[in-house]
Image 1 (cartoon, rainbow, N blue to C red):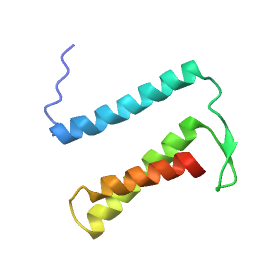
Image 2: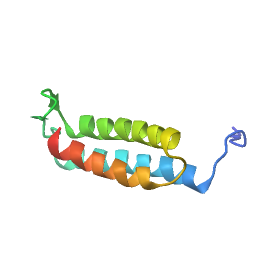
Image 3: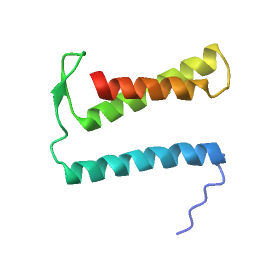
Image 4: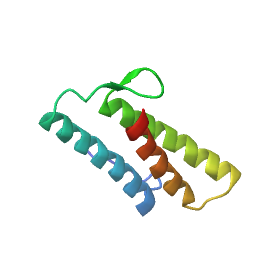
Length: 94
């Protein structure tokens, strides 16, 4: 089977992006294996979330932050810092 990915623009930033998401998912899987249950809790959104839910919310919110930053400000990497602050806030308070 020949997998030809030449139709996609695989740049180093694109590969790093998908590699980071893969590492996050593998890390969360290992964390769940070591400490099962996901530590469910009720945060400021008033519904129960687990570690995986909080990871999903932080990834989804970071995507929206990056899209808004790209549309309003332009292509620079300050949105990454804002996304990290957002993710820390989600894991801490949600």
